[in-house]
Length: 628
Image (cartoon, rainbow, N blue to C red; front, side, top):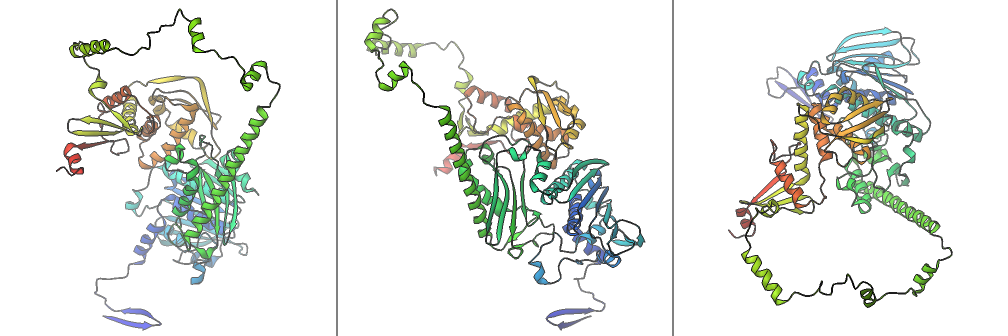
């Protein structure tokens, strides 16, 4: 039986023995569904708790994790803390101190505002909150397990808040099994804390994983000081362009890379912050590509679909941007996206044009100062006055009459032509024709190899094919085949920036046996440096060690897709060692590539699963030309 009352435009249901199919979910079920939207992995928990600490005006934030955050996450701050009443009220769904009316949703100035974080986290973990504000004499302790309140009591603690989260998704096994390995989850948390440390230099960030300190950035007054701490003391000495522009209700600041085609090293930073949040936004990314496009179309980095590194801070009137688009607040919606796109594009274009002008003037000054006009020699005077004696051909002919052969370049006579014709028609094929004459491959745009086959045409992606060949060779070495290496004449020393010095050496030391089997001889030196004195033989373009940096950077992406480190490293090395699109190959090289490819166990797909061979049959060609 249902009774419906319409009051103030709302339908109020008074149910009695409701036997219908549509029912209101139980609170426990609703909480877990909401948690699935907000809490995706351990970094989601850290993000929500750290942002609450920042909103609480903390000057020091410490994060502890164990097992990539799956076993333990603890965030401690010295912010304003909460009173006894607020400590309990904070776990009610949609309870928040940051917005009060509908209007506030469109004028958000804090990081958190949805009021879902704490109840969502509490519903899928074991959570303990200890908090104290300046006005309270004692702290409050609140404990939840699986969304159920276990304890609410008083305790002693300093002003601020400490939240401990254990066994994430322990009561939701279906969600827990989708979590990645401990190193992958750890890397997500580390990256997030780097974003926040850049945004808030006035906050002291400290991060510990399994009892080891991984990050410690003391509070500083200047943004540039924090950038140098994170990316290395030489950060501001790099080829950077400072950005500072203001428009109507919009402001852009930060740094973009110059136009020198130089190696990025480990500084592969592409960070966009909008109103104090790390954001991934397609509009801003497209505006950057559009601005850089005319300047760097021929550069390798642009051909890979990337833009040069950048760190940009975009400030927009809160009423012109909607942060309430995604539960995790990683996406936004601009009220006037065209205005934002145009402002960023024109700002970056203007700076790049000025950069080019300055470079041109600099080169012009160097050239003018290098080639100063001084007193000319007799030879120079003769050259510029056009009075130097020039020998004519007849004179040279007389001087070199002993080696001069007047018939060397004479035209062929009719008799010569007939002799050549008879020899060609009657010659005996004494030798087998070389392979390159039987199979005649050719390149399209120095990227794809075309080969005529019996059924029609075969097209091979040269980079993907070579990648597959090297990938299988490396796998064979990992499983016992002897490594083929080349010794470097001088060992290469690679200095790591601070934000990677606690992760890369540990990654290498834990998997040193795999590196050795592949063909690398790698040692860590003083914690912040890597020494390499031997490399796999396939790495022809070693480029002073920069390719090893590229391998490590790609390894991080590969490790996201598969937790098998050996397979990830093999793919990374194969990708960087393989010939690139755009490289011209001769016939012998193309034939060798084809032969090696069809000797592979899986010759039709690259290591990432993409097809590397396309066949077009004669009936397909005839159909295209409408001959059938």
